[in-house]
Image (cartoon, rainbow, N blue to C red; front, side, top):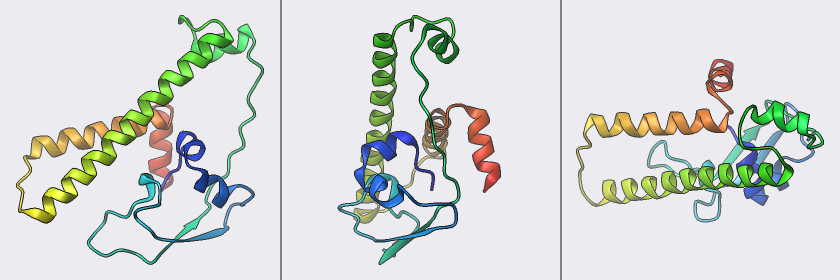
Amino acid sequence: MFVNEADFNEHRLFQDLFIGKKVGDLVELMYNHDTLPHVIHYHKDDRIPAKIVFEVINVQTIQIPDLTEETIAQLFGATDVKTEADVRSKVTEIMSESKFDNELTRVTDEYVTAAQSSFEVQVPQTMINEEVKHRVDSLKKQFGGEENFKKFIEAK
């Protein structure tokens, strides 16, 4: 599982669990579907785990540079983002899109789970393909582009 910065900042649980940990550390967490963030819900089969064990495989520290005109130009290129206020607005927009995507995924998963338990559903392959494409595109966006996404996949 990959926990991106937005998830890490949104869910205090991640901060409590992982801040101060180093590569190789194991972190155990009792599994409770109702209280855990959606990104760590277990979806592989009908079994529900009693606990989850995380192994820290990578730790990144990000030092945020001063927001000078030069830094803003490096980060956003030739766009309308020119000032610190523009940066804040753009970041808020990106985070809102990410939250929307995460909420849409959560609601979709809940709906599909409820539908599966109440009756047998034959899902068209085109619908599955579109859902997979949407999720992969969302992951690429969360990783900061296709190149970073490929690096993560190859690291597995």
